[in-house]
Length: 322
Ligand SMILES: [Mn+2]
Image 1 (cartoon, rainbow, N blue to C red):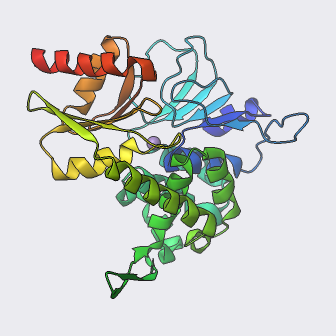
Image 2 (spheres, helix red, strand yellow; image 1 turned 120 degrees about the horizontal axis):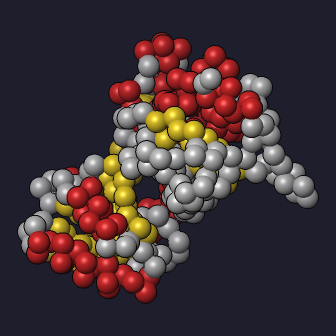
Image 3 (cartoon, helix red, strand yellow; image 1 turned 90 degrees about the vertical axis):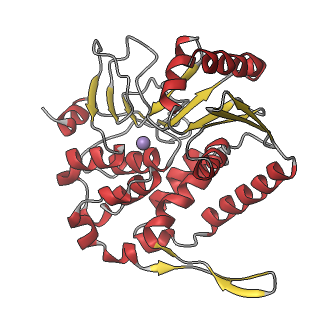
Protein backbone atom coordinates (compact mmCIF):
# COMPACT_ATOMS: atom_id res chain seq x y z
CA UNK A 1 0.00 0.00 0.00
CA UNK A 2 1.20 3.47 -0.83
CA UNK A 3 0.09 7.01 -0.07
CA UNK A 4 -2.46 7.00 -2.90
CA UNK A 5 -4.17 3.85 -1.65
CA UNK A 6 -4.08 5.16 1.94
CA UNK A 7 -5.77 8.40 0.84
CA UNK A 8 -8.33 6.59 -1.34
CA UNK A 9 -9.30 4.37 1.54
CA UNK A 10 -10.16 7.33 3.77
CA UNK A 11 -12.17 9.41 1.28
CA UNK A 12 -13.91 11.78 1.68
CA UNK A 13 -10.83 13.47 3.14
CA UNK A 14 -10.28 16.40 5.46
CA UNK A 15 -6.93 18.15 5.18
CA UNK A 16 -4.62 20.35 7.24
CA UNK A 17 -1.57 22.16 5.89
CA UNK A 18 1.31 24.28 7.19
CA UNK A 19 0.94 28.02 6.61
CA UNK A 20 3.92 28.40 4.31
CA UNK A 21 4.60 27.85 0.61
CA UNK A 22 5.66 24.20 1.09
CA UNK A 23 2.48 23.49 3.06
CA UNK A 24 0.20 25.37 0.67
CA UNK A 25 1.63 23.72 -2.47
CA UNK A 26 1.57 20.29 -0.82
CA UNK A 27 -2.12 20.83 -0.07
CA UNK A 28 -2.78 22.05 -3.61
CA UNK A 29 -1.12 18.91 -5.06
CA UNK A 30 -3.32 16.66 -2.93
CA UNK A 31 -6.44 18.65 -3.85
CA UNK A 32 -5.57 18.25 -7.55
CA UNK A 33 -4.89 14.51 -7.29
CA UNK A 34 -7.34 12.62 -9.48
CA UNK A 35 -9.75 10.21 -7.86
CA UNK A 36 -9.76 11.72 -4.35
CA UNK A 37 -12.83 13.17 -2.67
CA UNK A 38 -12.99 15.80 0.04
CA UNK A 39 -15.51 16.52 2.75
CA UNK A 40 -17.42 19.80 2.59
CA UNK A 41 -18.99 21.88 5.34
CA UNK A 42 -22.73 21.24 5.26
CA UNK A 43 -23.93 24.83 5.23
CA UNK A 44 -21.24 26.76 3.41
CA UNK A 45 -20.20 23.94 1.02
CA UNK A 46 -16.60 24.96 1.70
CA UNK A 47 -14.02 22.14 1.64
CA UNK A 48 -12.88 20.93 5.06
CA UNK A 49 -9.35 22.17 4.55
CA UNK A 50 -7.60 24.01 7.39
CA UNK A 51 -4.32 25.55 8.46
CA UNK A 52 -4.04 24.91 12.21
CA UNK A 53 -1.06 25.81 14.43
CA UNK A 54 2.00 23.59 13.92
CA UNK A 55 1.56 20.06 15.40
CA UNK A 56 -2.09 20.75 16.22
CA UNK A 57 -4.03 18.99 13.47
CA UNK A 58 -6.99 16.61 13.78
CA UNK A 59 -7.97 16.07 10.12
CA UNK A 60 -7.62 12.77 8.25
CA UNK A 61 -4.58 14.09 6.37
CA UNK A 62 -1.94 16.60 7.47
CA UNK A 63 0.92 17.94 5.35
CA UNK A 64 4.11 19.71 6.48
CA UNK A 65 2.84 20.15 10.05
CA UNK A 66 5.29 18.11 12.16
CA UNK A 67 4.24 15.37 14.55
CA UNK A 68 0.73 15.49 16.10
CA UNK A 69 0.38 16.65 19.72
CA UNK A 70 -2.55 14.23 20.06
CA UNK A 71 -0.94 10.87 20.84
CA UNK A 72 -4.05 9.05 19.61
CA UNK A 73 -4.02 10.70 16.19
CA UNK A 74 -4.45 7.97 13.56
CA UNK A 75 -4.60 9.84 10.25
CA UNK A 76 -2.09 10.20 7.40
CA UNK A 77 0.90 12.52 7.72
CA UNK A 78 3.24 13.66 4.94
CA UNK A 79 6.10 15.62 6.44
CA UNK A 80 9.82 16.38 6.59
CA UNK A 81 10.09 17.80 10.10
CA UNK A 82 12.08 15.83 12.67
CA UNK A 83 10.97 14.35 16.00
CA UNK A 84 8.11 12.07 14.93
CA UNK A 85 7.61 9.45 17.67
CA UNK A 86 8.59 5.87 16.87
CA UNK A 87 5.47 4.62 18.58
CA UNK A 88 2.62 6.13 16.61
CA UNK A 89 -0.87 5.27 15.45
CA UNK A 90 -0.73 7.36 12.27
CA UNK A 91 0.66 6.56 8.83
CA UNK A 92 3.78 8.61 8.22
CA UNK A 93 5.30 9.42 4.83
CA UNK A 94 8.56 11.08 5.81
CA UNK A 95 11.68 12.07 3.89
CA UNK A 96 14.41 14.58 4.35
CA UNK A 97 13.15 16.82 1.50
CA UNK A 98 10.37 19.44 1.48
CA UNK A 99 6.87 17.99 1.77
CA UNK A 100 5.74 19.06 -1.72
CA UNK A 101 8.38 16.81 -3.26
CA UNK A 102 7.39 13.84 -1.07
CA UNK A 103 3.75 14.30 -2.09
CA UNK A 104 4.71 14.43 -5.77
CA UNK A 105 6.97 11.36 -5.59
CA UNK A 106 4.10 9.28 -4.21
CA UNK A 107 1.20 10.75 -6.22
CA UNK A 108 2.81 11.76 -9.55
CA UNK A 109 0.87 9.18 -11.59
CA UNK A 110 -2.38 10.70 -10.32
CA UNK A 111 -1.51 14.41 -10.57
CA UNK A 112 -2.03 16.01 -14.01
CA UNK A 113 1.40 16.70 -15.50
CA UNK A 114 0.25 20.26 -16.28
CA UNK A 115 0.35 20.90 -12.49
CA UNK A 116 3.78 19.50 -11.65
CA UNK A 117 5.30 23.01 -11.48
CA UNK A 118 3.65 23.27 -8.05
CA UNK A 119 6.45 21.13 -6.67
CA UNK A 120 8.88 23.96 -7.47
CA UNK A 121 6.70 26.38 -5.48
CA UNK A 122 7.03 24.07 -2.48
CA UNK A 123 10.80 23.63 -2.91
CA UNK A 124 11.53 27.32 -3.48
CA UNK A 125 9.45 28.14 -0.40
CA UNK A 126 11.66 25.95 1.75
CA UNK A 127 14.82 27.36 0.15
CA UNK A 128 15.74 24.25 -1.86
CA UNK A 129 14.70 24.82 -5.50
CA UNK A 130 17.80 22.83 -6.49
CA UNK A 131 15.93 19.65 -5.51
CA UNK A 132 13.57 20.11 -8.48
CA UNK A 133 13.44 16.84 -10.48
CA UNK A 134 14.98 17.09 -13.98
CA UNK A 135 11.73 16.22 -15.71
CA UNK A 136 9.95 19.11 -14.03
CA UNK A 137 12.55 21.62 -15.27
CA UNK A 138 12.25 20.03 -18.72
CA UNK A 139 8.46 20.20 -18.71
CA UNK A 140 8.38 23.81 -17.51
CA UNK A 141 11.57 25.52 -18.76
CA UNK A 142 9.71 28.86 -18.45
CA UNK A 143 10.20 28.57 -14.68
CA UNK A 144 13.69 29.95 -15.27
CA UNK A 145 12.49 32.93 -17.36
CA UNK A 146 12.88 36.25 -15.62
CA UNK A 147 10.21 38.85 -15.05
CA UNK A 148 10.27 42.05 -13.04
CA UNK A 149 9.14 45.63 -12.71
CA UNK A 150 10.72 48.98 -13.47
CA UNK A 151 10.83 51.46 -10.61
CA UNK A 152 12.53 54.65 -9.53
CA UNK A 153 14.87 54.68 -6.54
CA UNK A 154 16.44 57.94 -5.35
CA UNK A 155 15.78 59.48 -8.74
CA UNK A 156 17.35 56.59 -10.62
CA UNK A 157 15.51 54.22 -12.92
CA UNK A 158 15.98 50.60 -11.95
CA UNK A 159 14.29 47.29 -12.45
CA UNK A 160 13.84 44.19 -10.37
CA UNK A 161 13.95 40.78 -11.98
CA UNK A 162 13.39 37.28 -10.66
CA UNK A 163 12.94 33.89 -12.31
CA UNK A 164 9.31 32.74 -12.44
CA UNK A 165 9.79 30.05 -9.82
CA UNK A 166 10.55 32.68 -7.17
CA UNK A 167 7.10 34.22 -7.75
CA UNK A 168 5.49 30.84 -7.07
CA UNK A 169 6.67 30.89 -3.47
CA UNK A 170 6.98 34.60 -2.65
CA UNK A 171 3.33 35.45 -3.28
CA UNK A 172 2.02 32.43 -1.39
CA UNK A 173 4.39 33.10 1.50
CA UNK A 174 3.31 36.74 1.69
CA UNK A 175 -0.37 35.77 1.88
CA UNK A 176 0.48 33.32 4.66
CA UNK A 177 2.51 35.87 6.62
CA UNK A 178 -0.30 38.40 6.61
CA UNK A 179 -2.36 35.67 8.29
CA UNK A 180 -4.36 34.32 5.34
CA UNK A 181 -3.11 30.80 4.53
CA UNK A 182 -6.51 29.68 3.20
CA UNK A 183 -6.48 32.70 0.89
CA UNK A 184 -2.99 31.68 -0.20
CA UNK A 185 -4.22 28.20 -1.09
CA UNK A 186 -7.17 29.60 -3.01
CA UNK A 187 -4.91 32.02 -4.84
CA UNK A 188 -2.44 29.37 -5.93
CA UNK A 189 -5.23 26.99 -7.00
CA UNK A 190 -6.49 29.76 -9.27
CA UNK A 191 -3.12 29.76 -11.08
CA UNK A 192 -3.24 27.31 -13.98
CA UNK A 193 0.33 27.85 -15.20
CA UNK A 194 3.45 29.30 -13.52
CA UNK A 195 3.16 32.58 -15.43
CA UNK A 196 -0.16 33.25 -13.67
CA UNK A 197 1.76 33.69 -10.40
CA UNK A 198 3.87 36.51 -11.78
CA UNK A 199 2.84 39.89 -10.42
CA UNK A 200 -0.60 38.58 -9.39
CA UNK A 201 -2.24 41.66 -7.84
CA UNK A 202 -3.41 39.75 -4.76
CA UNK A 203 0.13 38.51 -4.12
CA UNK A 204 1.65 41.94 -4.76
CA UNK A 205 -0.78 43.52 -2.28
CA UNK A 206 0.28 41.07 0.43
CA UNK A 207 3.97 41.74 -0.29
CA UNK A 208 3.39 45.48 -0.07
CA UNK A 209 1.66 45.08 3.31
CA UNK A 210 4.70 43.18 4.57
CA UNK A 211 7.12 45.79 3.26
CA UNK A 212 5.21 48.52 5.09
CA UNK A 213 5.09 46.37 8.23
CA UNK A 214 8.83 45.79 8.10
CA UNK A 215 9.42 49.54 7.81
CA UNK A 216 7.18 50.08 10.85
CA UNK A 217 9.17 47.56 12.85
CA UNK A 218 12.51 49.05 11.86
CA UNK A 219 11.30 52.54 12.78
CA UNK A 220 10.72 51.25 16.33
CA UNK A 221 14.44 50.29 16.47
CA UNK A 222 13.97 46.81 17.97
CA UNK A 223 16.21 46.00 20.92
CA UNK A 224 18.85 43.28 20.52
CA UNK A 225 20.22 41.46 23.56
CA UNK A 226 23.45 39.56 22.95
CA UNK A 227 23.59 36.60 25.30
CA UNK A 228 26.88 34.87 26.04
CA UNK A 229 28.35 35.68 22.64
CA UNK A 230 26.16 32.94 21.19
CA UNK A 231 22.63 34.22 20.92
CA UNK A 232 21.17 37.49 19.72
CA UNK A 233 17.63 37.93 21.01
CA UNK A 234 15.62 40.56 19.16
CA UNK A 235 12.18 41.78 20.26
CA UNK A 236 9.86 43.12 17.56
CA UNK A 237 6.23 44.18 17.68
CA UNK A 238 3.97 43.96 14.65
CA UNK A 239 0.79 46.02 14.32
CA UNK A 240 -1.33 42.92 13.64
CA UNK A 241 -1.01 39.16 13.69
CA UNK A 242 1.75 39.15 11.09
CA UNK A 243 4.38 36.44 10.66
CA UNK A 244 7.42 38.71 10.49
CA UNK A 245 9.92 37.05 12.80
CA UNK A 246 11.23 34.54 10.22
CA UNK A 247 11.92 37.22 7.66
CA UNK A 248 13.85 39.37 10.13
CA UNK A 249 15.69 36.42 11.71
CA UNK A 250 16.84 35.19 8.29
CA UNK A 251 18.16 38.54 7.14
CA UNK A 252 19.91 39.14 10.50
CA UNK A 253 21.40 35.67 10.30
CA UNK A 254 23.06 36.40 6.97
CA UNK A 255 24.82 39.38 8.61
CA UNK A 256 25.74 37.43 11.76
CA UNK A 257 26.53 33.95 10.44
CA UNK A 258 28.32 32.77 13.61
CA UNK A 259 25.61 33.70 16.08
CA UNK A 260 22.20 32.18 16.61
CA UNK A 261 19.44 34.71 16.06
CA UNK A 262 16.20 34.60 18.04
CA UNK A 263 13.47 37.00 16.92
CA UNK A 264 10.45 37.31 19.19
CA UNK A 265 7.27 39.03 18.11
CA UNK A 266 5.83 40.58 21.28
CA UNK A 267 2.49 41.07 19.52
CA UNK A 268 1.68 37.38 19.05
CA UNK A 269 4.43 35.31 20.68
CA UNK A 270 5.75 34.05 17.36
CA UNK A 271 9.46 33.19 17.57
CA UNK A 272 11.96 32.33 14.82
CA UNK A 273 15.39 30.91 15.55
CA UNK A 274 18.14 30.78 12.90
CA UNK A 275 21.74 29.69 13.03
CA UNK A 276 24.18 27.10 14.24
CA UNK A 277 22.59 26.54 17.66
CA UNK A 278 18.97 26.85 16.51
CA UNK A 279 18.11 23.19 16.99
CA UNK A 280 20.13 22.98 20.21
CA UNK A 281 18.26 25.93 21.66
CA UNK A 282 14.87 24.63 20.47
CA UNK A 283 15.57 21.23 22.09
CA UNK A 284 16.50 22.86 25.40
CA UNK A 285 13.52 25.22 25.34
CA UNK A 286 11.25 22.32 24.58
CA UNK A 287 12.72 20.41 27.56
CA UNK A 288 11.91 23.50 29.65
CA UNK A 289 8.26 23.19 28.63
CA UNK A 290 8.07 25.69 25.76
CA UNK A 291 6.59 24.80 22.39
CA UNK A 292 9.72 24.88 20.23
CA UNK A 293 11.10 22.74 17.42
CA UNK A 294 12.13 22.58 13.77
CA UNK A 295 14.96 21.69 11.40
CA UNK A 296 18.64 22.11 12.22
CA UNK A 297 19.42 25.77 11.53
CA UNK A 298 15.75 26.75 11.18
CA UNK A 299 13.55 26.53 14.24
CA UNK A 300 10.57 28.25 15.73
CA UNK A 301 8.56 28.55 18.89
CA UNK A 302 5.16 29.77 19.94
CA UNK A 303 5.07 31.45 23.35
CA UNK A 304 1.98 32.83 25.11
CA UNK A 305 2.71 36.58 25.22
CA UNK A 306 2.53 36.66 29.04
CA UNK A 307 5.38 34.08 29.15
CA UNK A 308 7.82 35.93 26.87
CA UNK A 309 9.92 37.27 29.77
CA UNK A 310 10.28 33.72 31.15
CA UNK A 311 11.18 32.52 27.69
CA UNK A 312 14.03 35.03 27.37
CA UNK A 313 15.20 34.18 30.89
CA UNK A 314 15.35 30.50 29.86
CA UNK A 315 17.59 31.42 26.94
CA UNK A 316 19.92 33.27 29.36
CA UNK A 317 20.10 30.17 31.56
CA UNK A 318 20.70 27.83 28.62
CA UNK A 319 23.52 30.10 27.40
CA UNK A 320 25.15 30.00 30.84
CA UNK A 321 25.31 26.20 30.86
CA UNK A 322 26.92 26.05 27.42
MN1 LIG B 1 8.22 22.32 4.71
